[in-house]
Structures are given as structure tokens and as C-alpha cells.
Length: 122
Image (cartoon, rainbow, N blue to C red; front, side, top):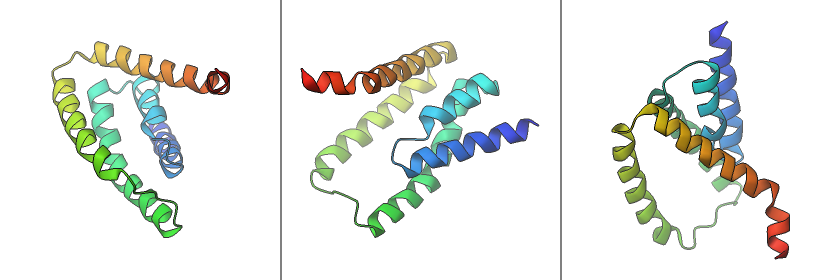
């Protein structure tokens, strides 16, 4: 029965990745909270799953002319550097702290989504 939850996590993450939202926002909580996978292991699994799903989504969006590449180099270098540094730091962190940080991130994303329209009016 546990394999069903892994399949659901993979499908949900793939759907979100295909829409450009980042499948990890759903995959990580499913792996950690529902399946009891340690936080770091869940993050590694999410990164491995991201590579093929992200490549597939990128191909489809490029094929449909939905990519905007202006400013990509200005964003790419800082993104690569900060992700490498953060991954290095995450390896040395306690799993409980990572859970709290990720939970805080999800809460911030949820609140931003909830109040997005009212914030634009200000």
C-alpha cells in the first residue's frame, strides 16, 4: 500500500512541475509527513525527480513558444551559486530545522497566494 503513496507523490509533483509551479512544494510534505521519509532523503529524491520532469516540462513549453529568455543569464548565475551554497549548508543541518524552514516557506507561499490580490491593490 505504501507504494501507492509514492506513486501519488510522484504524480502530484509531476503535475505541478508541468505547470511550472515546482513539484517539491507538494512532493516533500507527502514524503516527509505521510511516508515518514527523513527530510534530507526527501529533498534528494525531489531533486532527482526534478531533473527529468523539469527537462520534460521545459521541452514542452519551449516547443509551444512559452519561454521568455530575456534576463536569464542575469538570474542563472546567482541561482546556481545560491542553490549550491544552500545545498552545502542543508547537508550539515538537523532534519528538524529543515522541516521547520520548509514549513515556514510553505506558509509564506500560502499567505502570499491568499493575499496576492489585496497586496496588488496597495
